[in-house]
Length: 481
Image (tube, rainbow, N blue to C red; front, side, top):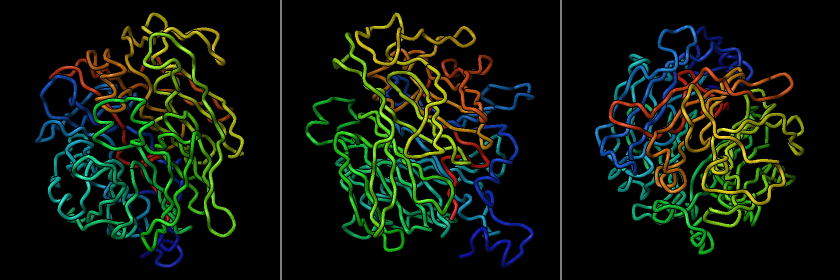
């Protein structure tokens, strides 16, 4: 298989495959003009299919900040969530590959929708539906989450459970040309207890995966008793990328309750990663040590706040999404319950330094049901956020950074059952897409007061919105090999 470097040093091809030669080359790409956003009706009381919204984010366009196309799925209650590509920068050295299909796994129905975004990027259409029964029969997996394209020409999708809803962290392989289910990526008997996210780094022959919990449990909402009963994850799994076997499982203890997003530095030579742990509200540094083993250390801790009027006497930040800028200089993450988005300088990855913070809704805003009685970080509860007269419900959840690192996009839905539990006003009023301007020189975050995509005014009623994705690739979908 050719690599990106082979493309220039060996074949001297005039046209390479999809993506970019390197992360730094990606930062020079044209500004994003549209983005794709999954819209979810599951658990909202509106019995309509989820859909993929195409949003105009070009400031020069007359339809700026508007949904310009809606692609409804052919079924209801899918719970569209994350998305990926049929090909990305891992295939850059292969001129036969084209990034023209968006892969949409479903969290609840376990289907996979393959969406054609190449024929007309502003008006995508469904190319193929991979049914859950096919995945169940060939892989014994369900409750799908993260999708990554591989340099081999396959698409790999993480699963969080078996078809009965018990925890099972395995991986589904699709052929990236036909989108037929090829079977499991992991060898027989190698699946982890729980699954969620993953990132691979072939130059170190490694893939690392994380854990959420048992779908039959978290699908009904969050209860601390389920954590205590062992239905949620607290381990990190290290896989031999070539042999497809789990070679190490690290128990993260109290520092790593419900480990979710993991991101390696974009430099493909790097053996350093950062991972967010939701319930612990911590960020862990993941790194390789002598002898080929992997270790973790806590490098960021968001302190809980003592409160009244909430389900527990303390409210954690609940970090549920994390990403690293293409130049590996900054890490960004959300606190879905506290309501803030943070930026840290990771020039010294073992000692991150916070350089930016902005509040977007959250559970501790003034005038809400929660009263903060002890706070080690804030002098006062933050004010509710209004953009263009619209009160923002929920808290910051999915984040996506522009390739040049100057714009951070934010949506508010985590998972519909949990949205309904923690932010019923978002179920009623719908989600939003916001933009934060980023200071890439000294660090700093500023909410853009002129950018709002209001999904509370959709044709079939208010809808929840999850992970944004650009047609040309972004900080959470492209991996270099």
